[in-house]
Amino acid sequence: MKKASIAWVSVDGGPGLALWCLPLEGGLYVVSGPGEQRAPGLSDATTATVTLRGDHGGQIVTWPAEVTRLVPGTEQWEANAPLVAAKRLNAAGTAAQLVERWAADGCALNRLAPAGVPLAEGGSLPAGSGAEVPRESPAVRQTRKPFRLHRVRRRR
Image (cartoon, rainbow, N blue to C red):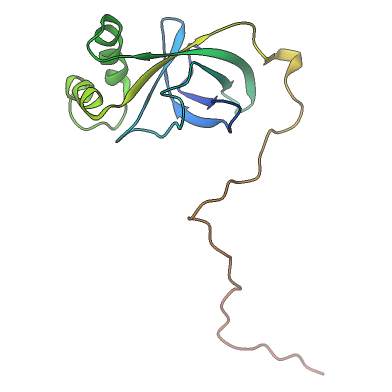
């Protein structure tokens, strides 16, 4: 877990979403909300399921997580939000400005801490790929036939 930068997080049995995270103090910190990544239901959840993958791309562990939302102005927020902001790639402004924006925009900074024994690890990992059918999206469009400049005639 200490090398994780992407975690697949599932809330209430929903699909696992790939989320940027920062491992810190035995947990994973995830930021979501306006201007950040989408994580439907995570900001209000108390539990989630986290799946981590190894360097080779395969699943290495799935564990239940206790979700704790850090509230701006609290001691936990003041201690951890700047650390998460400092590691946030491609953010506009300084880490302090980013923390202020998260607090002002109502972004959720959640800590996902292991809560119990892993659900799958080592020999108990599924043998299949775990691939799912793509979800419906307005970005999906029908594939058209290739364009041809001329008709090819067959000789008889």
